[in-house]
Each structure stands twice: as C-alpha cells, then as structure tokens.
Length: 174
Image (cartoon, rainbow, N blue to C red; front, side, top):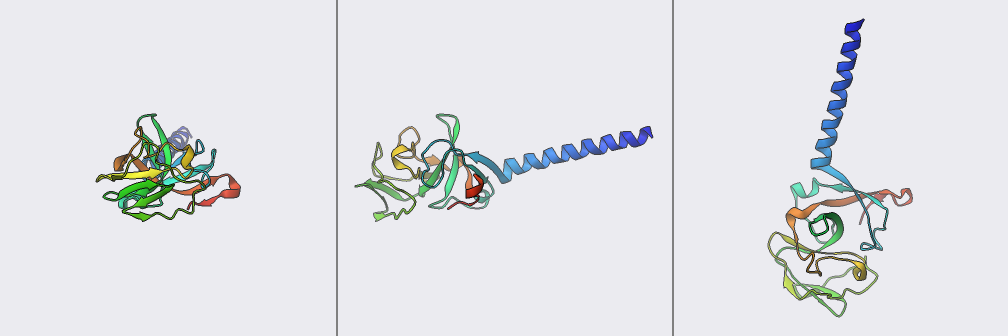
C-alpha cells in the first residue's frame, strides 16, 4: 500500500514538472499574452484588451507592413503595441498629415486622424530596423519620437494575432 502511494505521488510530481516545462517552452518560443495599455492603438485596440502574440511568426519570417507587433521599449522598460509601417531600406516621409513610403502615399484605413511629423524628418529605415506607429497618431509615442525611433528587429517580440478579451470582440486582429 505504501509503495502505491509513493508511486502515485511520484507520478503527480512528474506530471506537474512536465506541465511546467511545456508551459515554459510555449511562453518562451511560441506565444505570449499582451495587455493593451493606453490609447495609442485606438480605434483598432482599446485599453484592457487581452491579446495572444505569436512569437513563432517572426522566428520563421520577418515583420510585414501592417502587422501589429509587441516590442520591448528599453527606455520605459515595458512592452509597446504598435503597427509596422516602414520596412528596412524604405524611405519614410510624413507631410501634410500623410505617410509616404518611397514617395508613395500609404493608404491607412485603420486611423481616424492625420499623421503629424512631431520630431520626425524624412529618413531611410536602416537595415535590421522598422518604423512603427500607433493607430491613434495624436496620442502615440512611436518611431516619430527620438525616444523610440526606429525599432531594432531584436526588440520585436511577436505579432498580435488574436484578441481574447473582451468576449464580444474575441477573434483575429487586423
């Protein structure tokens, strides 16, 4: 009887350790949860929403224009959620409330306000870096600001792919 109890305890310990290892591997390499804080991604995302972020997306490919990404902000030591606008090697200009990429106007149906230059001047996105903006341009600290600037590829943790909360908005993110 005592041997059966010990075997049962050992099997439970193995199960718990296995679960922790699987959870660690998934969180480290496959996905993470992100919480929307602040108004910078309105109207696409709102404060309090909970997102699933795919880390795998950028282990097998690179960010694309329009992707909503979670990145590490080294200045404020927190995660930011922004939209990829400019890719390495592209020239970005902001003029008269519009974003230009290599001289062409970027059509953005996800914003409600014009885009102003703030501190940003026409620039080429360096290799290995990205130009990101919040969808709520008047209330977003993004690549227009010298405090963030172009975002290093290594700082981009993953692509926001699914909204978990609130339940009435559950689904994929565009």
